[in-house]
Length: 228
Image 1: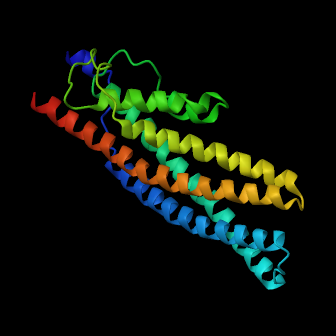
Image 2: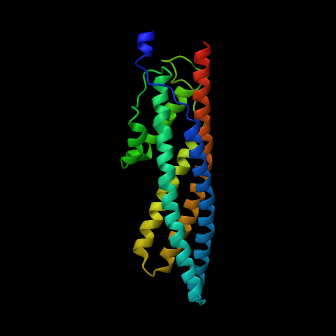
Image 3: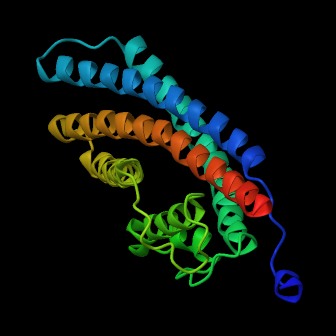
């Protein structure tokens, strides 16, 4: 048994990475709601233009500057959050081997690659997260029989919100590029961005619970194994 254990990677608590991920996810929620307000203001300006009302140049310029600053803030924040979250998920997957879990379907590389491969990234990350969740539950210490562990609806809602956000954001971006001065298309793109930002806030908020539920579960499972 000691010889087998020597081949296992060391267990590293996820709590430090979870704290950083939580801070960045909360920041994402705040920025997403700010973006909702900015995009609602854009919608108001577009409907004013459609109704024949004169939109002051200073209002258009102020919106353009705010929108540009918000766009780059979201890009930087998304990159930082993605980096920390993927580091957390990779370590969570490594910890499963440290906890002695066997018969895992997805390798630790899929914790990162699943998000990067087009089309596959619509469902493979969820499959990896589902497996990590099931194998981390402390109520089941059997290293082989863990697939029967139920997965809460929280995980599905979180991933659904994330995928919906990404899809609507992409649709809004494509509409904006091809809209030119077509006001109906610009209105539709702006409306899609409002919904996308609401979903981004929801996904980030739920992500905090997902991160901590798995982090706490692995620590508890480690403690129970040690006491056993």
